Amino acid sequence: MKLTYNKHEKLKSQKTIEQLFLEGKSVSAYPLRLVYLKHNNSRKVGVSVSKRNFKRAVDRIRIKRLLREAYRLNKTMLINNEVNDYALMILYIGKDMPDFKFINTKTKTLLTKFTDAISKS
Image (cartoon, rainbow, N blue to C red):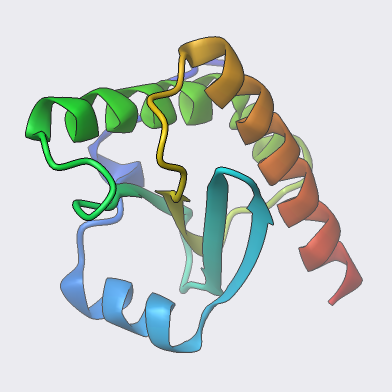
């Protein structure tokens, strides 16, 4: 299985993003937060970093790259649990610049909490 994060998997629809933040539920593993909502027929994922906490664009872009890479490597957790019809937004809510090892472990924790939350509901 290829571990890719291609065009079809990216959350780009403004309408879906607005609906996600209005009606979605969330789980947290500080400094990450995952907002999720049942979507039509495919898994869509987006990442976001607050401009309030990171003024410089290079810092925000760096964190987004780390988040996307951690998701790409750990999305097998979602595939194994057959989570295919959700819109997801991963938010970095911390104030410190992270490294990849830290983001990767927190992403694993976050995805585990997410799969537990949807299996209960």
